[in-house]
Image (cartoon, rainbow, N blue to C red; front, side):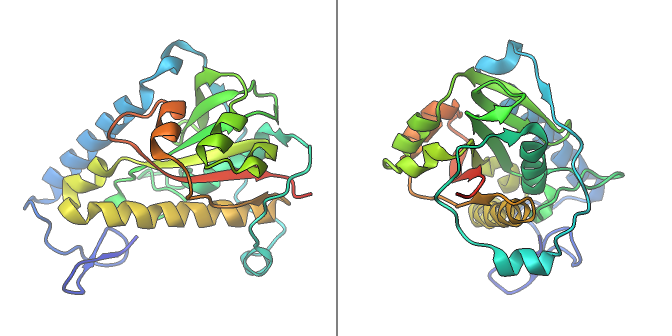
Amino acid sequence: MSATNDNGRAEGRLGVRPAPSPVRADGRQWALIIVLVLLAASATAETGKGTTMTTIALPPPRTDGSLAVEAALARRRSVRNFADRPLSLAQLGQILWAAQGITGNRWPMRTAPSAGALYPLEVLVVAGQVNGLADGIYRYRPGKHDLRPFETGDHRETMARAALGQGWMAQAPVTLAITGITARTAAKYGRRAERYVYMEAGHAAQNVYLQAQADGLGTTAVGAFRDNAVRALLGLSEDETPLYLMPVGVPR
């Protein structure tokens, strides 16, 4: 993502030279900062009840398909009515890859752009109807393209109540929760980090919309929820903020 400061100068890694950051550092120092931030982020993501549970490998994502991006854009709609049909593990894995999957080889870039390539977003899954996956709450790990369990059981109704009683959400086989850890971005961009994290959540959510459309699925980005209730359900730490909820399923 190319970010812009108050003077209209571009910041970011992709395509333009970044503007001076709040802390002056040369390229090697920034590389070290990024590595340390990502290591800390990984440690944060590994905490919780699921640290002793077995991870679930996801099928490799596709990188081509039969629906052109123009067609997906033209057909994209928000869906709030879902059929009583499960998702496959491959479908779930493809949606998660679209949100935050790894696309680079030499450098672990992702499907959605990020200011400074600092990747503050996390994606969690509240699963209740996925073939080959036990009901539960999981955290997606982009680097390994797998799921790390946090909690067992079907929590879709609890999530719907946390979202101000939007009962239609519980119809969907899964709900994705996109969260943000602003400290990752603030390490470089200081006070502007919060807005960059919000921007990135929008990038990831649109990817989910388009991938869902390409796969014959539907979703809606939900921003109306009680932060504390969602944080408690997902076991989020104080520095991780829920930003979007996205139920995903087969449209009725």
